[in-house]
Structures are given as structure tokens and as C-alpha cells.
Image (cartoon, rainbow, N blue to C red; front, side):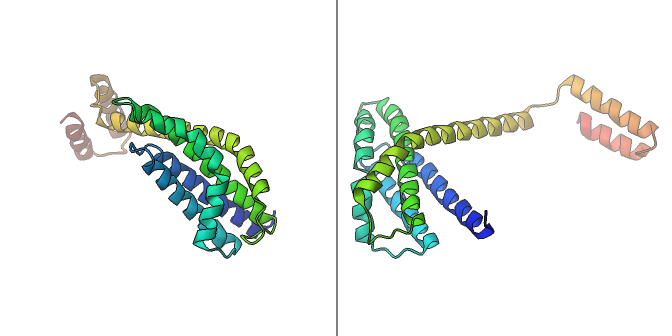
Length: 207
């Protein structure tokens, strides 16, 4: 693969993936419809960034109209999750999970549908909305899987970070201290540290 093509592909993938993650976060906004506005803004920003990479001219009103047209199916799918958000106490959490996943899937589908159109030489002047909607609908299902994988990866990183933090905070056990004292004694016997260094390290270890 040509180096410039590879760099462009990497940039496009990064833009789409970042906006998928941001859309998933916006899906947890507890106020129904506010999440939809936030996701639409995120998708608009994503397309604008893709336009810069592919050197595509655009007008905000054209971009917004096209985006609204192709994402209508995704909005219907996310609607149930927004209704759940209205349920007292548990609604925000349950609805947020559903809307988060569907928002991520929608943004993934939008990004790759526009990417495909631009890579085929298309612009905002020659959109075939039916073709674009089909691409979006086909990619939406894959987007749900990608969003789920991203969520799992984020959860894995979060748990690993929490474990590292807990390990750092966990005090050394008596056996740990004994083992480290033995290691220091061996270093001293081998002449790798002086008597003074041994005493200082021992004091620090047991204090």
C-alpha cells in the first residue's frame, strides 16, 4: 500500500473511531433529545473533518440535510432508549446504555458511508441518497458490534487502571518486607551495596 494512502486511511479511521467514542459518551446524557442533539453535532464535526482529508467542499446546510436524511432509521432505533430514559430512577441508566450503543453504531455507519462515497470520487454535488442510505443501513449493524467491542475495551482498561491503583495503595505484607530484606542482605554480601546503603534502605523499608 502507498505510504500516503496508508497515512490517509489511518487518519480517517482515527477520526471515525474517536467520534464513535464521543457519540457513545453523549448517549448517556440523561435528558432525552439533548443526547440526540449532541450526537448530531458530533457526526457533523466528523464529516467536516473527513471533508478536509478528502478535499471536499461543503456547506453546513447541505451537510446537515444529508446527514438528517440518511440517519433517520438510526434515530427511530434509538427512540426506544430515549423513552426508557424517562422512567424514574433507573431510566437514565438503562436508556443511556441502549442509546449509547446505538449512537456509536450510527456514527460508525455515517463515517464509513461518507468515507466510501468520498473514496469513490463523490462530492456533495452528486449524492445518491438511496445508495448512501443503503450503505448506512448495512454499516449500522457492523457499527453496533464495533461499539460493543469499544465499550468492552474501555471497561477492560478501566478495570486494569483500578487494579493498578489498588496495588499501589496496598501496603506491603510482612512476608514481602522479609523477602526484600533478604534481597538487600544478598546485595550487601555480594558487595553491590555498602553497609551504609544497606542500613539506609533497610530503615526506609521497615519505616
